[in-house]
Amino acid sequence: MFRFLLPLAIAALAVQSAQAENDRAPPGALTPSAVAASRGLTLADALALAARIHPGLSAAQREIEAVDGAREQAGASPNPTIGLEIENTRREERTTTLLLSQPLELGGKRGARIEAAERAREIAALRFGQRSADLRANVTAAYFAALIAQERLRLAQDSLALARTSRDAASKRVAAGKVSPVEETKSRVAQASVALEAVQARGELQSSLHALRAAIGSQSVAVDRLDGSADTLPTAPSLDGVEQRLAQAPAARLAALEVRRYGALAQLEQARRVPDLTLTLGAKRTPELDGRNEAVLGVSIPLPIFDGNSGNITEALRREDKARDAAADTELQLRADALSAHQRLTTARTEALAIRQEILPGAQSAFDAATKGFELGKFSFLETLDAQRTLFQARAQYLRSLADAHRAATDLDRLLGAGAEQTALISQEQAGVKP
Image (cartoon, rainbow, N blue to C red; front, side):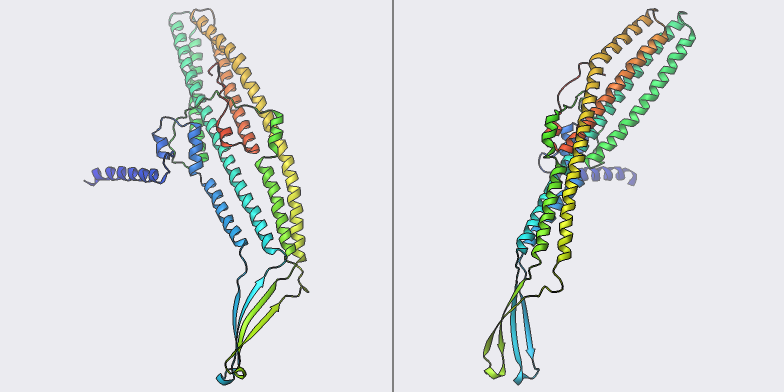
């Protein structure tokens, strides 16, 4: 009985877990179980799923919430102090004094704290946006890497079918006594080589899918097929457009905010040089006054003799200078990386378009002619095999160019901080020739 009930119990638990997962999701949200049930994963689905479940994005949001708490604390005023003093333990001679002291911050300390906390809040929000842009870029890069790996597998399977056709044609010609049996042996070797490439392509696809799941943020996303076009080429912005977006790049804005934050911290340390004032108000009861209370007023202020906070001020000012130098270094590196990614994107696009429009049609035409000529006995198998190898190499090079273009485009988006709509909306420039 237990053998029959155990599979049913496991299935029920699996259904319950999937239902609980779907119940936790907001209405209309894409869940891993929904992805598993779908026929193919689109780029938009992958981006939406990553934005909802990736732990790195959730951690960045938690940082914003933590900084909000620090901002609230920065605006708090110091608490008052209540004290009780008793002189003489004899009841008839006892003097009791009740004091209430309130520190008053001078020199703009509270405003400087709030300013520093505000800058920290802006930095946390910007880092959240930067993490979102990185996530979109990572998911997009992983998606197109898996999409191209899927296309490579299809290409290998098509190549294997063509190799089988060539082998069958060679076998028929050998059986008819038109060519040497060596030609059939060569065709079988070529088929075995292509079959090995298909195995490698299948393994590469599985690795790419694992990387895509990791980029999305969950290995439970059961995706086996991608619904997209590997022929889609990303657009290349102009150099003027890249230059205009550099100033608003996340890294540049973050470096500028760091300078402002350290400046606010330096102002806070300078404000701390001004000593705080403490006001005291109380009541004193002595036996001489027959139980009546006597008002007590006082004021105190520390003397800045031994500690003028000069060391902290120097540290804060030097850190501000360091942040300013780091911002200049970030600007230089950002410009170099963005221009490099732009050049790689332009080169990869030019190469892919040249292969698509010029090389692939010629290689396909030569292969078709060689195959037909071999069947008619006009060409040798070596000539047919060479035409087939040329076509396969052109297709493989085309896929490599597409992969290079997508990697460069995602790197550029990551550096310049493209929005979600700019990242997801890739140019719908479709191929005229399928690889």
